[in-house]
Image 1: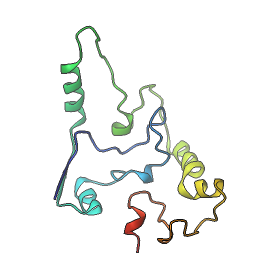
Image 2: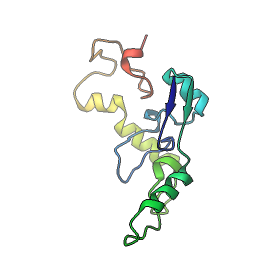
Image 3: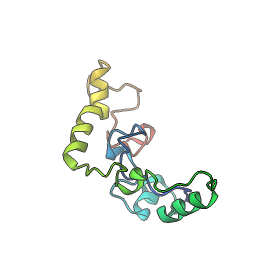
Image 4: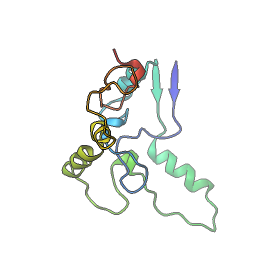
Length: 132
């Protein structure tokens, strides 16, 4: 089985848009393509190159709408605002928005078997149905 993505691997939260609260939820977080393939159970993974993606969008963009920059922070970790977002911020975000924090906000005790399939790993990378 081959997995081909028309986008680069998403390795970082986009704190200005897409609601991805923790890096641990991202399959490509701190993993190479071979590790990702093994994690999702396929033989080979290939991702779009970020520069090629940007070039293709520039190529098809209407000439009346000149594009100069893209927010590719979820791929590159470089935020469009130029801010340096450090680990301290992401650790705080993780503490506020991870699965355990969400369960506590919803009145569910941490570790409760809310779906009848065992406790989640809270790593966010494997589905609960794949838990032992």
